[in-house]
Image (cartoon, rainbow, N blue to C red):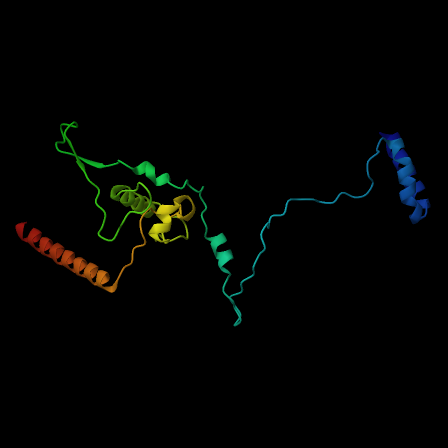
Length: 209
């Protein structure tokens, strides 16, 4: 160990005496003596680029703030899960809810047909009303982050003619539902009626006690 340290010290002194322009040549000629034949240039750090897409800087503290581009918003709020197949919701076909008629007998069941609301219409080849309703229920149960549930926005004729191109796999297999002002008023009336019935039931429940 002592001899190796002394040898290194002598080697450093010898290199320091050589002019700077000849240091590289000297090291290149003497590198084989020390068992190193590689490149003497310092290694460059080469890593994969983290930002594979261009970045748009959006400032919120300036008066000249511009909204983020639609492409950036779609990339930020896009689907994070694995995309599903085109007609993946067809697997919900022929599924029905059942109700046990007797809690003691599990064999006596009643199958209930799934009925769609009035404005929910199926779309696509071979899609019936039950499958469309189940696809809507599945979309509402597990919504995609940042994507509203709107149904298929394309025209019915093009969707039926070429579904593999025109159908959006991220939306349920229903036509676009248009909600009018009258629908909102009808829903408000239903809510008020339900509240009145609940209030009457609570009053009668207190009297019976």
